[in-house]
Image 1 (cartoon, rainbow, N blue to C red):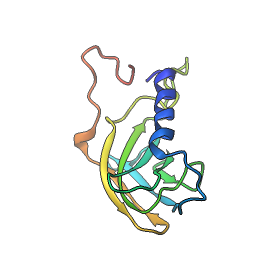
Image 2: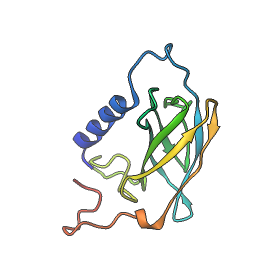
Image 3: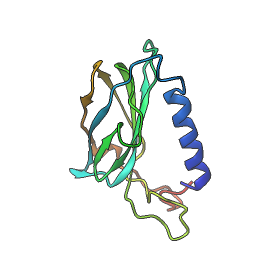
Length: 143
């Protein structure tokens, strides 16, 4: 993933998670763990986007050493049904910083959760079927 793609993903995160005034709605913090192949995901992102019918804003957090917490540099979502998108990386950045989080460990993983109207804990175990396959050109992790 190059820096332009990273910026585009970050912009999309803010668009999908809602940029409305947080005084209108009550947000709740979500924390938990993310593992893949039985090991903590070194670095990554988790995005919680409201499912159809859920009018509240979404949330997001960074994954560090297999843990995430929307109250630490992220933003908590509202309660209700959400689509969760998790991206995980090996944490080995390239010398030219083209891949600041390193190579992708798996293709973006998506699942659904129904969050309570309260702070909550959610753990995610990425299945082996989501493991990223090298592209035909061999440029794993690059776009």
